[in-house]
Amino acid sequence: RIAYVNGRYVPHRTAKVHVEDRGFQFADGVYEVCEVFAGNIVDVTRHLDRLGRSLSELSIDWPVTRAALVAILREVVSRNRVVNGLVYMQVTRGVSKRDFGFPTPSVPSTLVVTSRSASRAAAEKITEEGVRVVTTPDIRWERVDIKSVALLPQVLAKQFARSNGAAEAWMFDKDGYVTEGASSNAWIVTEDGTLVTRPAERGILRGITRAAIMDYAAAHGIKVEERAFTVDEAKHAREAFITAATAIVTPVVQIDETVLGNGVPGSVASALRAHFHDDVELVPLR
Ligand code: PLP
Image (tube, rainbow, N blue to C red; front, side, top):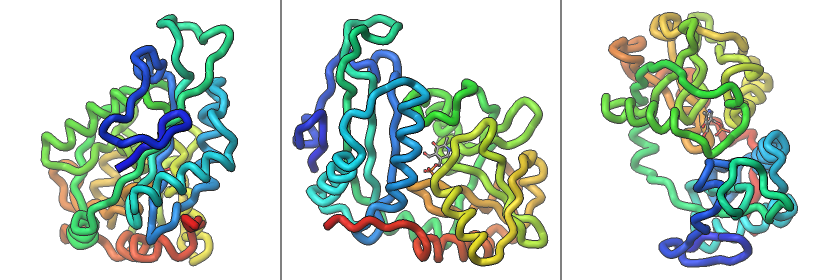
């Protein structure tokens, strides 16, 4: 495997950044993950739009131009022969003597890109069986709209899920409303087939897969309601699912100890999963 680090394609196992990199010292950086599907990078325009927004909210410079970044993503994916999987990019404020304030004068941003294949067996198991989620308080900061590499609350939430035999943790705010998953957006389906997901204005990351599902729903006459829902409402919902670039649409069949419906993936989530790639932007590698 190879990785891209600051202008070089290097063997993945020896790829390194400096100990004084601000990403390492302060989690002073942002990232994006795109799905690679059938040799295409999925929704790269939207992912780079969001990357640009994250960078600008933190006053971090683009490490290379957008067009150059797309070329690097393609190169890393194709050098790793990834057909189905993901491509990861991280940008940090760069390397500078450890000091909380921004470096003056500024230093070049660090750019790292990696890519890996996904397990087809794991994806098929999810399609057939769905996943369980557990709920846990959302202890994150107020700028979760920025896709920052400061992910310690999500690390703890995900580990809480794993140690309880669940695939994902749904975090809830102090009023008991679900915000999102540790690394995914949360959805429920009501009795009449309406998709419900929390508005992106507050408390969540504006997921690219979430946006793609909204477009798909609009194009296919599926009703979407952007409103917050409680853990309790979710437990009584007809279906639930999560969305993320690496999970596409993953049916949820159990929340904490509550089994949804008959405990198998619901028809709405299953159909969204099956048709997800019909309408999305696909950028081929060559
Ligand atoms: N919410 C959080 C906290 C995430 O970390 C992610 C993805 O990693 C998502 C939502 C889903 O976003 P996307 O669909 O853009 O992958």
